[in-house]
Image (cartoon, rainbow, N blue to C red; front, side, top):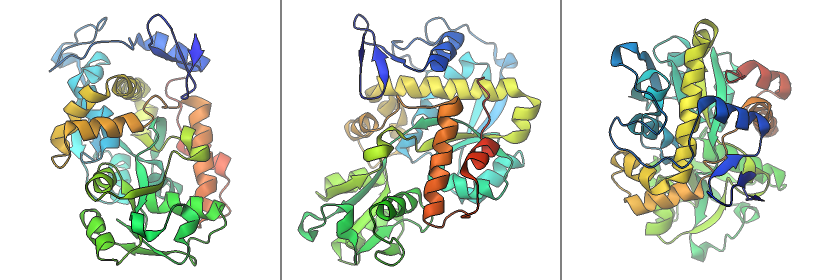
Length: 353
C-alpha cells in the first residue's frame, strides 16, 4: 500500500483508491461499491447491483445547476444507475434562481434535495431554512484570472485593483475575499469588486474595465484557455487543498420522516462522485450535453483538476462546515456572534451513521 495526495490509500495490485478514513471504509462495505467498475451506458447496472423494478423505485426531486461542471456526479448517477441501485427514481430539476429560492424550494417540499456550493449556501442556512447538509461532494472549480500583461501574479497584487465577479454573493467572490483577508488585504477597502453576467467577464477584462476576474468552471476555465489568461489563484491552494466546496443538502422533513431515502440519495451521489474521480473522461462525456461551449477534452481536464476523491462525511464534513462559517464571519457574510461549531451541528445531518 502507499498514500497519495488525496489522503487515500492505494492497493498496488488494483490501483483502486480506497478511503483512508475507517468510517468511510465501513460505508463503502455497506454500500458494496466497486471502485473499478467499467463504464456502462443507459440504464445499465454496475457489477453486483440488483435490478429494481420501476414500480418499486422511490420518486425524488433533485435540484442542480446543469451548467456547472462541479455537478457532473449528478448526471453520472443517473446514467450509470447509482440512483436506481439505491431504489430511487430521481427527477432532475435545473434550478437557475437565487440560492434563497432554491433552499426555500427544498425546505417547502417543491424539491427534495439539491447540490450546490458551500460558500453560497451557508449564509441562507444561517437564516433557518429547514435543509440539512449530508455530505461534501468535491473540492476545486473556482479560479481567479488576470492577463499576463497586468503584472498580477498573486492575490496581494489585487490591492487597489478591480475584480470582476458574476455576482456579489458568488462563491468565488466570497472565497477570494476570505483568502485576501487572511493575507492581510482588506477585501472591502483595498480591492474593488464589479459585477457582470458570467459570459461577459472575459470582455470586461479585455476592455480594461477590470484587472482580474473570478468565477467557477466551466466558464472561468474556458476563458483561461481561449484568452490565454494567467491563473493567479484557485480554491485548492494552501489549507483549501483538502476542503470541499460543493455539498449535498436534503430537506429536513425528509430526513425526519424518511431517513432511509435521504441515506440512499447521499450514498448514491457519493458513489457517483467517486466514479467520476476514477473515470473523468467518461464523466465528461455524460456531462457534455450541458456545456455546449466546451469540448469533452476540456471538460475531462476540468474534472481531473477537481478533487472528486474528497467527499467528506460525518464529523470530518461537519468540521469543514464550521471552518467555512469561521471564514465567512471574517468577511462579514455571516454574523460575528454565530458559534461556528453549533451552527455546523445544526445544519448537518449524519444520515450515513
